[in-house]
Amino acid sequence: MYKNITMSNQEEFITKLVLDAWNGQLSRADKFFKANTDEQLQIEVAPSRNTGVYLLGHLTAVHDAMFPLLGIGEKFHPELDSPFIKNPDKAGIERPDVKNLRDYWKEVNEKLSEKLASFTAQDWLLRHNAVTEEDFKKEPHRNKLNVLLSRTNHIAYHLGQLAFLKD
Image (cartoon, rainbow, N blue to C red; front, side):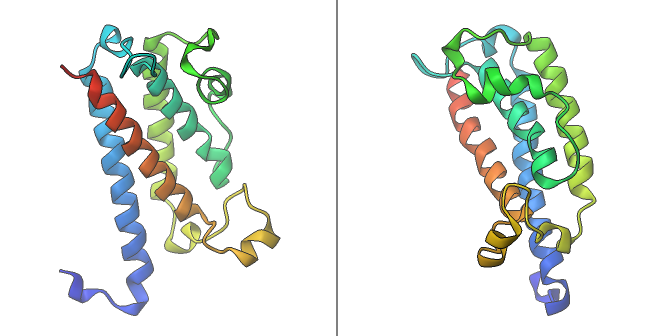
């Protein structure tokens, strides 16, 4: 299967592998959130740790932040930053209810997946918006593909925590 990879299509092949990994982790998270009730998501993954609801909001906010970071648009729900990125679960900050968070999760990830699918191999190798042109020249690995790798690992990390909600 891999013997048909040529020098001319290696970038497309590698970026497809990374995008497939992202979509796989995203699908696992989506299945998890769909399979658990609002009540199950209210439970802490461990004593004095994050709840499932917090992790749903956190992942949604982080994915929403990918739009400006990758230069593909503005955040859809900047109001999620304070309760799910800037503050911990038990901060007592008002947050959307679980139904709205589920809707936001679906909306953000559908639109993000659509945008990511349109990237070419060359698009992935461009700098992301949190790095300056000058720094990017010194560190070209600080590109959009690296952001996607990081966010893929981020989903996997939190799925590991969420696994503790299962009996």
